[in-house]
Image (cartoon, rainbow, N blue to C red):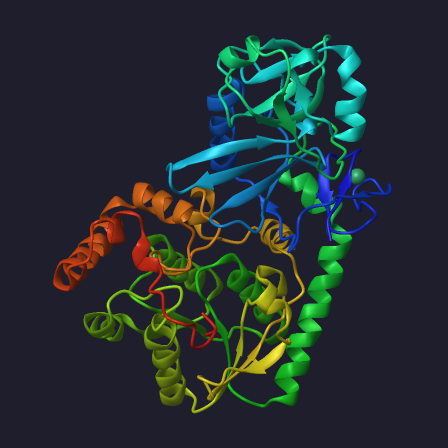
Length: 460
Ligand SMILES: [Zn+2]
């Protein structure tokens, strides 16, 4: 689903670049493979994590960068630069910090100043070809700050990177060793990386053909579904990028229809402003379903929603939406920005469906098979007013305290929106005191897991 043009230095949505007409090469990334653009704040974040560990930033200026969220107990992102994976960052909730996990290809863009070992050139073939560990007899030098457990680069005597891995011992101990493993190296699928600057405008041009085709396909899907189901039409608008792309497409296909906004009362202020701004700019009226009152009423009974006890979707979203639909239209057809690459679960769902908890709404997903990158390139092409939260390092903009969020994301929100978080935290504290729960229930975000069997999988 992802290709790279080595002439234009941009990602491409197809195997031929629309900008220079040359063949693009496929980029291998970890499934579900829904890479998204890294915004300047994301790039600064990655560079900060790499600088703290290796003494130098990973990403040089002017390069297009993608991030790909990969399966992890909390949060891990693959970093794609120059058409290949150059490394990852991984959040360690117990230590409240991010870890830099490089690939050998990172050396195309950086030379480590710290956290490296130098090996005898004679040891290089077995390390590179057989994935052997760095052993004490082959060690020429170990940078003094290396501690056991650190991610390190393995360099040859000419200081070229031959591998990456994790140190098995501290630098001090390594110096006294005559045998044993110093670094356990790590093998990854190989990737190609080339240096070269480009802009997102270039990337839009490189995928111009696909964007046009896919837009036409989505528009004809929308017209077709609307013709087969003669119901009042709206777009389910959340303030997120996917619903914005869907709104643009529906406006082109059918003209201006209402935006149905489920305001849970737990939205970011930026999201509420985006709903108003988009409505003003495109002239789509907003129909609002309000869930705030019901949410807090239920909170007093159940406590905070949890990953395995997600009463919130039905209470704060589905029920209020159902009520508003019945009041306004009786029954309706809603176009929704759901995409199959968002999760493995959504991969299995169809393009038109009816939620069993929301019977008055027939749902259809025009961008079901679009990747996040495709959505972003489309929004860039259309110069669409997307939610500024995406530029502050968040990749989703739903309820700010969503229990399904990673700890990494909740900590980030706590920092970026302290007042909002404080309000939530004080409600948690009230519940904690009332139930006599330990401080770690709140402090370590354990409220997110209730420990009850999962009853159902709502469409949140
Ligand atoms: Zn090109």
